[in-house]
Image (cartoon, rainbow, N blue to C red; front, side, top):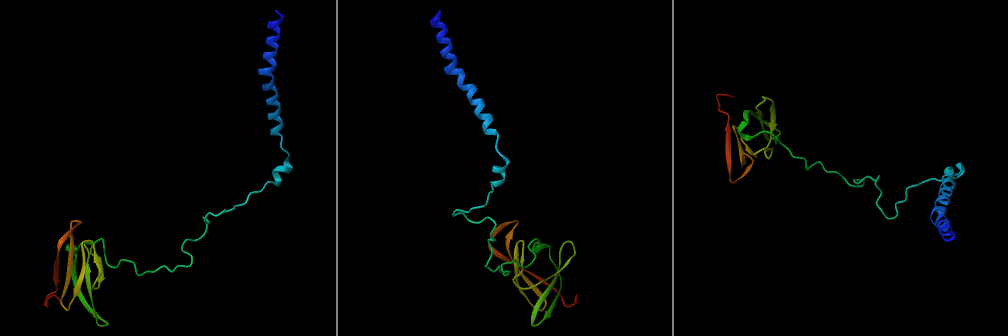
Length: 151
């Protein structure tokens, strides 16, 4: 009987005793002085990484020449030619969109399915490169003219 009592007592001290001592340590760790909290300060250190707040375009010039000119949302088939004007030795065509807004176009201006090939005194030649979004194997030239009577 004494042996069973000694085994039970040793089991208690070996297994259950450390559990009580751990709870005491946890309560001691939770009590941190307010002075320690005030002294703790954080700062950003890059340590070889790039700065996330640096302007990526700093020192580089942004060119506006890449901007697409023309009216890319209008199809050549929907264009109605209103008039042609010569200013500063250059022809400018005045067209109307399906919504009846006037636009001024020059040679090289782009549309959804082509571009302006040339503008002459009484006609505008468009080069159609796409048909319903599919590129054409051979581009088509579409001529829109103004007759002498309409001027």
